[in-house]
Image 1 (tube, rainbow, N blue to C red):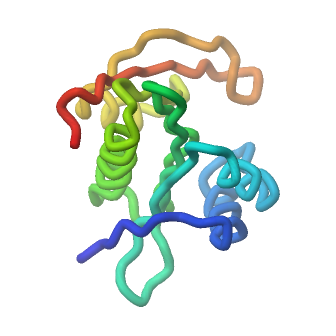
Image 2 (image 1 turned 90 degrees about the horizontal axis):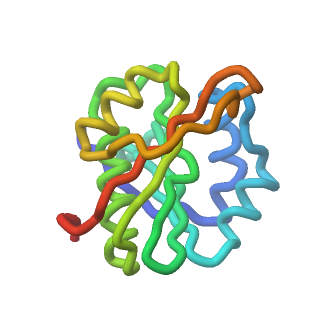
Length: 150
């Protein structure tokens, strides 16, 4: 499987919203996607095989010397194939190129696969937002320096 990582644009908003709806219980709609993509410092990538529908995407924002992963998702039928790692690699490389020294993300405390991936990629937990997801599940705040990226 040869996957390309393509920059996302406002024209992708409906597609991104549809994919987000498949993966999250509180998805962002097309309007939210457009608004986020219009914000300064926001960027992202689609993971897609040539001639096929995208399988996942990442959206990040850089402000000053910090970056944040706003959302990262891979469609359920395409998980465990390295796509999330590839998307995160692209997001971190772009953040570092844009001047960020550190990147943050939030992950649901019950998302064991996500937590394992982020830990393996050098992220460390630096905080917790109690009852963040659906007023039930904690969000773990994770951080990774970008000094070794680019």
